[in-house]
Length: 231
Image (cartoon, rainbow, N blue to C red; front, side, top):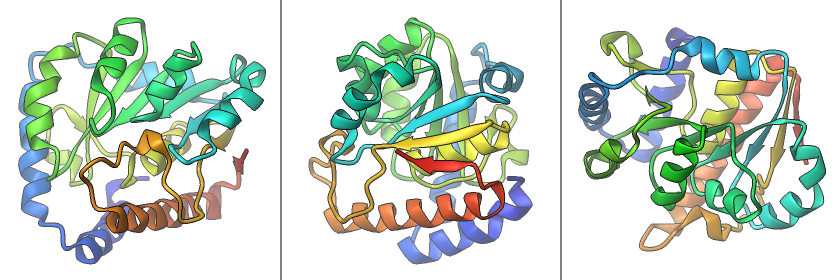
């Protein structure tokens, strides 16, 4: 999704969550600066992984672990994309994600370790994670790129593939790079929050509202794409 298409959706999200765009821009400026001297992975690296491949994206719903167990053999044959905290669940089951989409809410050491073993980590900047960007970016030594939910054309080192939460950003990513099929595992939109969301000290109602938006955004992608399947 190009930014011209994403921009009106983003404006609606800003209004719904009362987000200050200037804070998103501040965070993006920081991440762009922190990545200035880093070895940015070119987009064609991700394209090579995803294009015409069957992709599994992991959501942090209550069904996550049981579904990993159920589909473990199948997962070995797919490109696996973890959304933030689900990285920890995958590590628990000895699955190294090909890609991690994160705003640094999960257990960071698991994401750093996965990066050192070859996972590409797509780190997102938004107004609420400025402190985490400052704290953790330097610990990722390689295999990282940055994203923003604002206009990417104003930043040298950031991309915007569309999306708001880690889960739906992963879906936008897979659609952008033309995955053959996208399978969603652990995406539970039943009003329950899974342990790999790492909700400690966070607003549950806000999280549920984000899940509503996640579902809405996935539906927007699939309205044209028609290649998204829930496991």
